[in-house]
Length: 561
Ligand code: GDP
Image 1 (tube, rainbow, N blue to C red):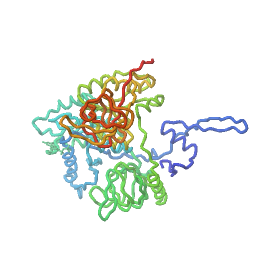
Image 2: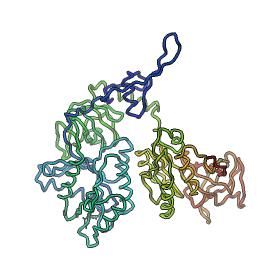
Image 3: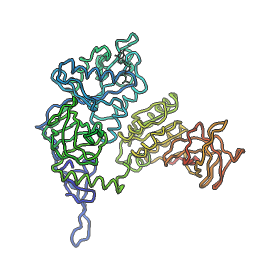
Image 4: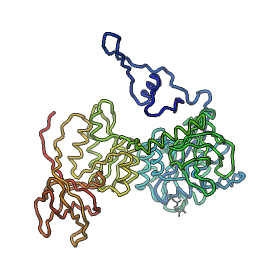
């Protein structure tokens, strides 16, 4: 579509276009030719003619407003701060100053526009990124000065850092409180690699009080400055495209969506495709609920005229005719119906092994049971050296694997590694949907081995895993000694001394040793296929009927170097 060619999956495209697309994805296209008579194949590379097709013409580029997202720990004041900023419009005497909640809004600060995304938090930010939408330019980390860096602040820092081209600024909130300690927070930021500007670093830190309104002006000033440094530009005359921030069905209006225009100028009457649906802009409302005729780059606008409800993160692209957008929409919907759209293939420890030559980095999100094991693992992982592959721990924290971890991994093409932790129930379907690999471990050397193996791409593991049997959970019992899964061994055997993992819809949710294995009232060493038994795994208690318990053994094998 970028090249203005609306081809479906089966359609033949010109070699030079194919070569450009290949190049964009890091491949070189080779064309095979059979010489007449000789019967030999000639392989030639299709050279991509520079420059790539222009989407935005250099000379048409104009400065655009920065797009800001607020992140930070719960109760540190994100909502209050956003409201305080929203109110500056009223103070500035803007006509119809009060904003409607449409998912985003813009304010004017001394002639410079700044656009804010209304949904704070890193989960929303990263789920948009996981859908390929990089809308935010600047993340404002809201930290309460009396509380300092908290787990969600750190998570937010990691989510923001994982997003390329995003700058992080800090709003040090609640400075009106007696317990506020600005230097302490600055020191904590420094420890997290965000050196404050006044300490010689690059991170702008603005002390504010959202409730008292102190420092808000300065914060806006700094956002404008940061944006100037970033030289954010877009062409107002390019083919318009934007990203859906939120969408809903409104009574009397049908499906509507708030779109932040990223390039071009969206106008009434424009035919478009958005996600799976086609549409035509019927009307546009600004963030005050006022009708407008058009919306240029970085402007949030509510769009009416959808034929179906799009998703947050979907791209809206203006097409040349209603017919072409309708055709494309039909094709996308048909492909969906035929279930041709498969789960995206992400990095896994195994596939990384196979493509070691092409891959340069193994990214992981690491979750551990305790701070001690977390520090030990991060330390040990950082010790692993590989000439071929870099290891990047994009996020590490104590706690179960959450949906937000999965989204971060999805957006950054990372593998989620858990040590002695469970997988939250919402994370399981998310991992499946996003195609993110979860690897659970309960033995440190096994974890380190597998990562080393993936990174070296050639080392044999010291331990090999052999699955010896499966049991299906038929019933869950609450007994005095804890929760026990009543199982039927469906194949192989379950052994008391073996290791086991709980699989839910083929995704692992727990991994550990068997703590009890019983037939009726008796402890047994082994239960064979076709027999029923009671199984307890470590401290896991959230068995569900239908879960599969996979029993395996770790076999030590000789290291071949
Ligand atoms: P969020 O969870 O990050 O969106 O936090 P909220 O905006 O809901 O704020 C949490 C609480 O902190 C509320 O009770 C606010 O009134 C209070 N709060 C927010 N900003 C300030 C501030 O600058 N000073 C003081 N004293 N309290 C604040």
